[in-house]
Image 1 (cartoon, helix red, strand yellow):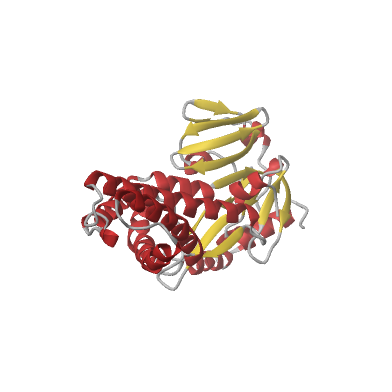
Image 2 (image 1 turned 90 degrees about the vertical axis):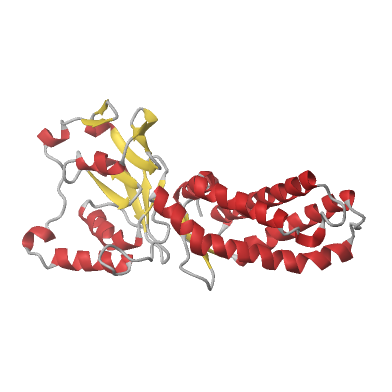
Length: 321
């Protein structure tokens, strides 16, 4: 297990349950989802429904409308904060490789228990309801079932729309453009490439001197190819690491890779490009491989690219662990 920063940067989380395909995401992608307008509208809709249906009858018991709206707004916000906090903790502390898994019911129930204590405590100050263990136990089962229903709606119906709007590819086991599952589609592409003749079997060679001398241009900035270490896609921006430091520019990873001569680097993951000279090692694992960079950065290797990355690492004589 790496450091806290390494785990947050390189690990992916898979939230699984019996309903629908499990999404798989990084901590950065989770942050993008939380800021997305579709997600925020859904959270607001949950507050509206809780208020409109007077959940637990607080308004009927004397709670003013404004206080009731604020109560449910704080409830939803608190639930999200606890839920996300548990996911971040699992990113950091979970044993295993670059992909960690969690049952959705775990953060849901934990967050709902803490939020239920807050809701009952606040409601008791506006109504004649008492804040005690009996009142909490009376509300808790209903609250957990209700939160689970809202969570299932989020993951089955809302999150796929958020995913499509941000183009994150959170549902990596969904269908590709050919109609096959993504893993099968990538495997089929690899088989097709292997069967296409001797040219397809050629290993990527180091770029020629002429190719290496060509600069790379992104957002009006010019980079010498030999200075580049890695690039990471972050929504509409790229975090570019060079020998002299890092900077964030607006751009697409595909535009950067299109300028790279063959053999200059490798794309182990849809969000990463790594220079050949920056790779220090390859760590294999049953749950996933990780490229180890000289800077100490751990870059996840996508499942569909694992065989290709291993072959390139052998050709480059990269040390494997």
